View 1 (tube, rainbow, N blue to C red):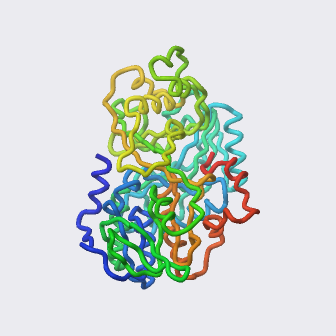
View 2: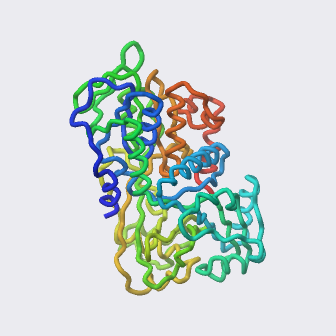
View 3: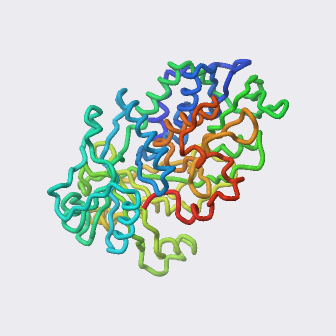
Length: 465
């Protein structure tokens, strides 16, 4: 259902029946990142061809959580996302359902809250609240773009009763909440439609097909093979998402340090109203144990039983979705589902167990959800795709090792929020424009730099608190 809804954004897109004989630039992949990249190149005057195996924005882009945030553990990632949110807000003039409810990170242990607060204070712009007197609640509807500059940024830390009063769905033992303010979500279908419309207006030609090879002459890109037909071009941009490594292998060596990981979410009807409709994204900062029961190995097997009864890490989260549904996620459950073989259109998910795992994890700090664990409820909708990620979970944006070849990918879980700034940055690389200060942090060549602190970044993680 979710895939079909997102694919509907592509209706009316007129693909070329066959690829042209020449293009200034060939963009491989038409997810949000590919569409933004192609639009930028075309707007700069390049005759741009976007080759896609699926309708634009209907593959991995169609199964995102539709969220964005500027809160990241590195200044480079925060800068990239802040720039992308600036661009997203400008795009929102076309009406894309952009909200600014924020991300609320909830702690049930004082030490967990203290660690989160310390990370926020290292980034600055933190306000502490023991009461709600000086706390400004987030707007509940779509973002008022005329008043966006007056909205809070940074972080509000709500302690004790203030946290539970601000977010009444939370359990009594929640000791505090870190509310990251420049964050929220968007209607991804409307957003995709607007980006595709803009790409078409800039002159991008979409062609339905498969890139079979990339030709090089004299040590640089000279052409691309699309369904066996040669397209002469001096520029190929790899925005192929889960197929990033596959396309890269046609052009350059060494192979990209990326892996695909299965990603799933579920849409669940909150018939009991356990979570207010104006809630922000709610995220647990505490580890938890899903089940205490023994004897599960005979039912689920050793690996699944260990995940059910072991200590699961923080990160289970939800947000309101639609009129009366919740969107639930816990990357922990699929974190070891690495996929080395070629991706498939629809990965397989544990549709029976995954929703209950998410609900049990969430019920620890949102007690109203326990009724769904203990009683009957409607069967949720499960959907998902792939996270394509580097070891330190930073994207790859820039020259790919052969003149005329560029990479713009590995946006594991943040493709929607990064797409516009990533397209802008990649275009600057292609055109030889001025690069922002954060560009080198995402260049594929960073791995050849012996001073690049890869191990340190991997240890820190690529997400947020």
